[in-house]
Length: 220
Image: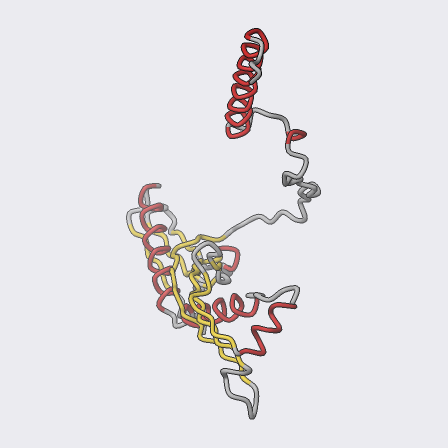
């Protein structure tokens, strides 16, 4: 039986302790992101190569945003194939769309004579144009696919498809349905009443004793 030299044994133990200490420090540094990227040659990096933001146009706004409607719709879209059961060929998607529609009064459409003030500036009469609806602003953070059912052939096709989950059609349908729901007239009427109240309070604060605001009928 041979025994290791005591000095060599001590050196071996010290080397092992140093190696273990370095390993622990390396693991800690890596977990805390203290090490440079070259220590992980296969790590994933993200580079932002976006171009500069370009200002395309500037518009002067002359409208009063008087009301906002928040809407939610469930889009139930189904596609199938003739002479084939849905279990083989077909797709059904339930999509929850959440969006806002603004109602506003465009002051630039005030016609000549729409604002009348008496001689001593104590009375004012204003005739407003009808309120209008802005386009639906769909909330992409809250809008989502709730459920999807696909036939066997469609699932197989999605496996080889480069864009299996294109949701553009769902977003368009949701926006159209919300826009239709907002066009019932209720939101425009609320906008006109809010605009009427705002103008009355504003002109009275400027010293007018009597303010009359005529509301045009809501454009259909």
